[in-house]
Image (cartoon, rainbow, N blue to C red; front, side, top):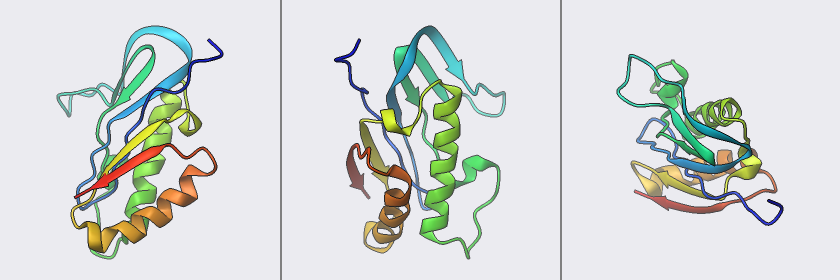
Length: 134
């Protein structure tokens, strides 16, 4: 429908504590679909219902690599956003459809600047609404 907008999305960032719940409008309607189901975890990486996609939380470790003491907040955030891009793609959508984002940081005073810098590189012109909390 031409008047429908992306519904919502949440992104969280990196090793400190990043949980993301993404809700976005997909480009095509499909029946309920579970994305990234694994025997390793008791949940799906995402669930598509109609043209809405819900993504589970994401941490920097979601790419399969451990977090190192030397990993900056910016690098951890970029890792999270790459995973989110991949999951959105598998769900048939992309970051331009994200409407709302929630970011959880372990130490907002320490981590906000680095997270925000990497976020701004990723998000481009299609900036969704965003809340960042500790």
